[in-house]
Length: 82
Image 1 (cartoon, rainbow, N blue to C red):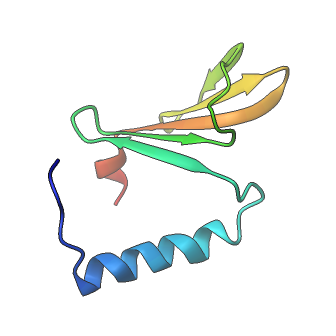
Image 2 (image 1 turned 180 degrees about the vertical axis):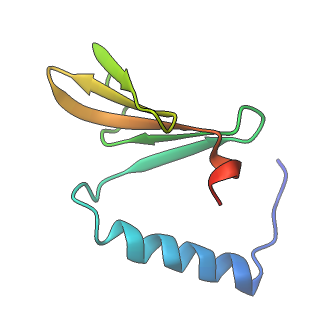
């Protein structure tokens, strides 16, 4: 297991994330970032639900649905958004 040191800037970034999550309509979120694919997965259910439909937006965000409810987002090309 690789351990990553948490420096002061990393902690500040996590606190910023916490403040943003607090303002979102769905606050129960689980995330996973795939650095090799540069994709961020955001799920609103744990364990993640299986989508029965999806929509790809013009800005490379895949909105995943189950029974017309948004169950998660898949954000492509994350590193290009920062």
